[in-house]
Length: 397
Image 1 (cartoon, rainbow, N blue to C red):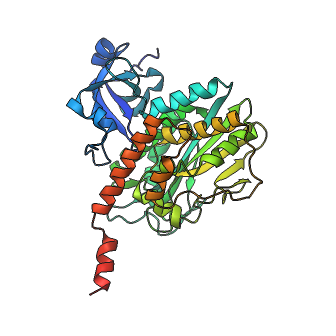
Image 2 (cartoon, rainbow, N blue to C red):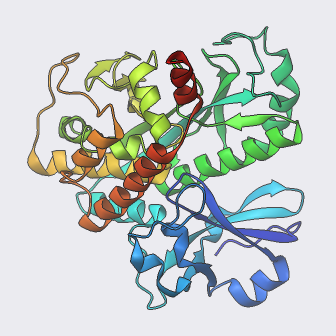
Image 3 (cartoon, one colour):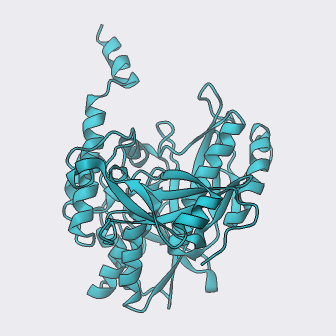
């Protein structure tokens, strides 16, 4: 079990929730060493039954009755510095009986890794996230896209200088300006799947905190504005090398899994209007207009899955890819011809909800859980009065 570094004074116990963020409890080093290491700590059940505003989703009654505690089991291999003296430790979660919480995103991924391992395959995962940096007035920190730019990023430089140091423990492969105003992309190096997803979420946590210290907002909306997109691209390779059936399985299930790639109302603005939207389900060699891109060469050859937005829960995204690919292997599927469109992702949350319930690769419990969360998202959107509605209403005057 990995020891806590000497400079640790406080420990953040973190649990990935269904909305691409962490639930957290802060403890002293002494308490962790005396009471938690080798044991557990409590976390309210409703973490897995809340909406993005932390309001309970009533249909998920198993997680709401009595609002009791689950058990957090710290994974000390995940120890990561967050700020001076404060370190994060990502946790698995169990019911008091010791049964894993099967819908917890980290557990969903662990279960899929186990199933794929029984077929003799081990994945290596690299995650890239796009983020848009906004000033206090909500405007992008650059007035234009800075794709691969050096000049034009002057307002970003103090924050980026800080992030180079703070993100170093996560193993950043590359970072660069992106094509939309204020947009930046950070790519983490390939690693074991659970660690890759933990680190992708830790990256977002660190980026948000650093941005706030600079008076800036780090925006991970899938569509910061109409016609723009923040994505979560997953680079995946298998050992031994992935058979073609893995790709075929993902393509066959991609539409049914839209709700995993696109869990919010805003997700569908990206899919409908983003210039590199992956709504057309097809694959291509080194083709960034394809939903699945075959990238790299030699030992670095890999599949790049471009389905998910930056708002997607990354453990679930990777788990869904593995589940679909595994189904393709088990069925001996053959992929379509390169460039051939075999369908489209769902373009509304209603379509995605219906398609999810037809998924053949996710557990029934997870499908029901994700369906409840998406229904709550749809209801909240239908209950909201937006600037778009006000503008359209004014036109009727």
